[in-house]
Image (tube, rainbow, N blue to C red):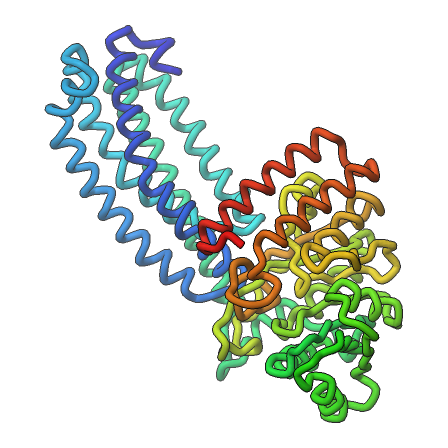
Length: 469
């Protein structure tokens, strides 16, 4: 833009070639981090995993070195490639392109350093770094073009990339340093992190509901993760949904293994699915807050302390959720890092319609909301409840950045269980949109738009899991 206003037509053409080539080169780290590594970085940042710092340090070195190599290759190929691709009239841009390739290693470094800043607050820091570099680049570009023409513009571009890289590295290093101090352990006990987020004392007024169907192999792990909460819920309700594998007898044994009266067992008269089981327990719950846990999942020991503590201080919140972490079958909930970032983000109506980020084992909801699970569904019944809270009740939903629940199989496309039935899940989601359109909670345009988006997401899940059923 600056070159087009202050430079000559040949300068504009030469600079345009340089920008085009650099843009293509910059796609390499962007695709690598955003498509392959960003979800992992986000999970590590949310859970305080030390692998984030290792990836940052090693990644910075590798990315800068890769940038140097790619910049060198681009500079060597420029004299031959530019006339061949763009035409001989652009031979004059070769020197400019060679000079501008100096910025490639710094852009690679910027992408790596800024990628570790994936939580909500740090995204603002990352954006501020980019804004400062942009303002500097504009000012330097005006001065450079005025005094040195196209060479000045190229120098300003390189200087802006260097400044952006320095700011990103310094801010990311500061963030990782703070995170490391927050998670300092003494003899394996994350005491400092616990002091940063002190748990509430004693039992808290939360009813926990676990639907149970043929879950004798996993229910003990789920119950134990509830009992080991730093803020123990006041009651745990286990709903036997007509199990056929001895689960009923095992639940009785579990009741005797824990303090008297802490576990209550409800028995369904017929197998009606998890939605009906949760509603039945919800109707008998005695506490002002309800939390749900699937029988094959588990909780981080800090979940209730963090989630209930925040909801107690923010009574306007109707429902909250958080990400989950997948562990292997031998993974221990109490062995996971202590969460460092615990401030939730308000989730807008549009984001709720776009996707369901609130898995059942992550949900804590006020017991006085009128929404309930759709008992006619065995798939996407939890999404129905979330949509009813937000679209019909007008409740405010919040999502914590830290993963406080653990799953032991893939969220979609697993070999067994409800999550393996991708098409039925998709049909349930589409039925939800249609139901709320008929109730007037969403418009026809919203119904059509989000239904189409949902179908695209279904196809993506099928391709990722290689399952089309």
